[in-house]
Image (cartoon, rainbow, N blue to C red; front, side, top):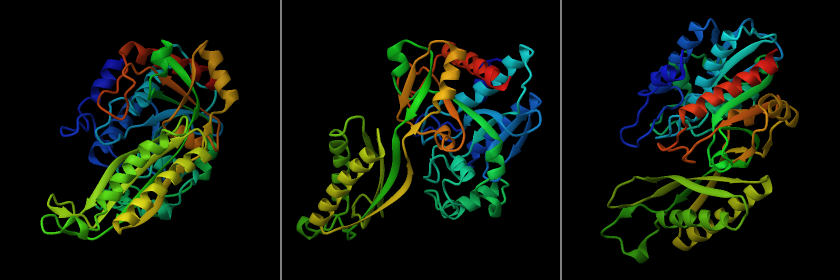
Length: 399
């Protein structure tokens, strides 16, 4: 099957008419449709598909076993995300299997395609949820306490998808099977564009995390409450947004972003009683990342005090700097020839698995440099170059 045929199967799944792009979130209708599509395509290729206790899909070429070569990515998206983030790695893995079979190759080691659940955290707020649960990076208790913006709990969502809620959590036996993990992904930036290269390899991932800042004030009437009588939590919330940009600009290589603000009760003519602000912060090291966050929080606290409001801060996720296995990276570079090696600011399941098994990432050029937005893109020829690169890597690793 061609790239065009596989890609067209996904073209209308989860399209978001309001935001543009795609909204496919963990265990929602769109993501479940994507999972059904993957299962059907894997079975069509003679792969044996099963779902682990945390909702991750595994398609095995031959019998499962230790020291397995695993590739794959995820199928969910951020709200209104691009088409390529996640699905490109899954489609490329399926096509790499087609390529290897056409060449008469049969793996000499156990081989699987993995599709990880809720990588973006777009529904329940915790990124890389499936790989975090698999590896024990987060606890079942914490995960099962998560709720989506509509109030649906993770327990309800996974039960609807047919999972046993009581079995969610670390899976040491499955983790021990993975000998190597290689994730192909569209590049989320302009590195390959600037270097005029269709594919590249990942060097590292910035230290990054998410924090929830809850500002508490006094709800009141927008028309009858004098400015001097207000305790408006939106004011320090706005200060936190400005502090994120100001603070990150003082630390080389750092980024700080507020992409979501939720006032309560959310009326146009109402002074909010509370405002939740989600902060995403990333930098070259843990000390830099936490220093940026500390600076933003200090500014937010000062603004809250000036307005007579309270502030509570909760860390929702954190991943330290990831340096991908240099031996594996060099092996992939030999298989691919001279390709660029790039750092990335984006988190991935490969970054979570890197603490436990050798992992690597193959990037495909994104001509727009835009990601997590509808303008995210990859040219067909570059996608095919990615499939060829992935097939070459898997041939070397699984021989």
